[in-house]
Image (cartoon, rainbow, N blue to C red):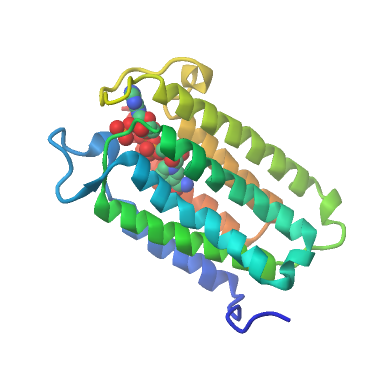
Length: 229
Ligand SMILES: NC(=O)c1ccc[n+]([C@@H]2O[C@H](COP(=O)([O-])OP(=O)(O)OC[C@H]3O[C@@H](n4cnc5c(N)ncnc54)[C@H](OP(=O)(O)O)[C@@H]3O)[C@@H](O)[C@H]2O)c1
């Protein structure tokens, strides 16, 4: 029996929440766009900030799976695992390894709120609202989406690793990245991230996941453009 907490299954409402978050995060500067003297206000060390802000996006869907009977629908849980895989990597691998500049506290809090909301919306929609046809496991969209997600994940992780190796620990200089897809695009890590969520949206074929893919493009697309310039 579904919990009474999980009554909202209106995709448009779920997607709308994403657009609200876009406007919260869209203009917030961090990394190289913060003044060299440091960002105004309080900051958090990058490793801790990335860990704390990304953790909810992993934890919330996992708790949803564990706390509801929807876990009996293995196909849905497996799809949600791809989402969790990304955030597991971001929280437990990317965060402790990052050599980035301290993150403004305000931005970290916004990001944590977004990750909590997004983790809930994606998990809730997939587990409690989404309806897949019996033929979905054979559908080309599922296969193509998962491949796209996997390719994006590899590109994203590899590109972030290249960026990390441009600095020694404690250094905050910017150098031109070489290798991997940086030979073709200046925002290779962002390209990977966009492919991932585009693939996830295709594999799950729902408005909330397309909404998240769109959010990602709105959020990191302009950053990629400015990095390039
Ligand atoms: N899904 C989403 O909406 C979303 C939103 C934001 C980020 N992300 C993902 O989170 C990850 C990090 O994002 P980001 O915006 O921090 O990426 P970024 O600006 O490319 O920076 C990534 C890391 O590399 C460092 N770096 C960047 N360019 C460098 C250069 N030329 N020389 C030396 N170091 C360099 C940055 O240091 P500094 O911090 O000191 O600049 C940072 O630690 C990416 O994989 C991105 O796709 C996803």
